[in-house]
Length: 413
Image (cartoon, rainbow, N blue to C red; front, side):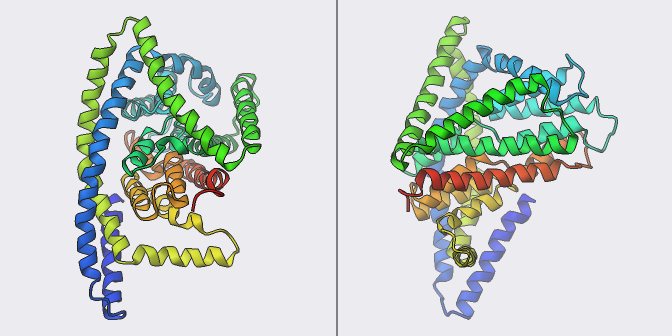
């Protein structure tokens, strides 16, 4: 799928360029496309410089959190909830611990730890699955909640904004938090409807009601604030949360006799290795997106959507963020490239770039998650997993656009 998407970018760009040359007489289009390839290759290296530092720094602190037992502690807190949501999984089964550990790791932004733990959890659930080829209810719920992308700290989004010159990289902290919450809630409710889960169970309600009250009260408070105040609050909370967690990791690690410096260096080495492996993918996707933009194909597609939206009488500023939304279910690297390209062409704090950043931080590569998690255990029949996961993805995109208008509609162009 990723191969076809990448090749498609170049083929569409080629068709558009030949059309502009033969019909529009624009012979300079090919020079612009070649220039774009080299410019995007250069941009890839510039992005990687900051990516090396950011991943090295953050994975160092996250390794301290792992060794301090913070992720295990979160897993114990979430355990009773997943025991009720997955009634076919026996109490005390290893799958429940792995599932809660996976979600705790995702919430903290421990992607590298979350994926292998998630694959182990899926294999453990497969041991309870009476079918070798059809996904069980527990496997579907686990996958959809993974695909809903609930992440409390979108550090990578902050990093891309910083690299593109944002004065306040964490400005999108609250919009992403609200949008990703909407995606997760819709994913949970859609699976609960399909599987007739008892969400009114006292234990489930003990988790959901406080969370709903806190979120509802918080949104009611936000509704009383001006656009400038909302942006300021998002900035303060984003920076305070990020720095507060770092201090929390260090303090708990020290109290639990973790050699925090050694643990940081150990995690930082992993961050360097991870960042190094991302460069080829970043170059490939940024160059493909650059050619697509230089050929005029991307602008023509967006103009068509813009005219339709304008005809409906709706504000069109979100249209330039749609490429990120449309590609994200298929490829995280392509969506990341489109996000960076939007920041480059529209401005890092433009409405389109803020919307694209919020979409990127609140949605997941649904088809990739389906392929990896189900492919690891030989599942061929996904049942209602695809529909529920895409519904959660759609909810995340819609919520991201609405929240961006709420926070930045009056201030960003």
